[in-house]
Length: 104
Image (cartoon, rainbow, N blue to C red; front, side, top):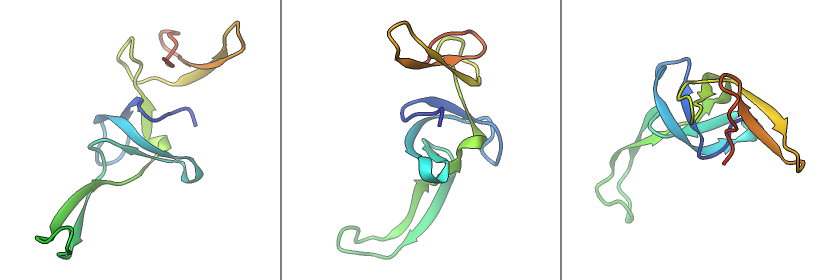
């Protein structure tokens, strides 16, 4: 996967198209990510001892990784990601538009 936890992404398809958010969790086995304030689902919860009032809870549901695209921190545009090796042998991610290194 070319997207990691903590990256800022933009949704490129679906009901939340155009929204930006930070990656909260990556699920590589299912090729899905959970993005902050994107793909909100409502869950009806019975009252329990932990939550005596019960009610409707809003949670972020996973979205397929092909429906999000990384936002470059330098040029602030959604972009594809390339890989590059530095002189010391470490592999880093690179913005395809401005050639800036995305990894911190």
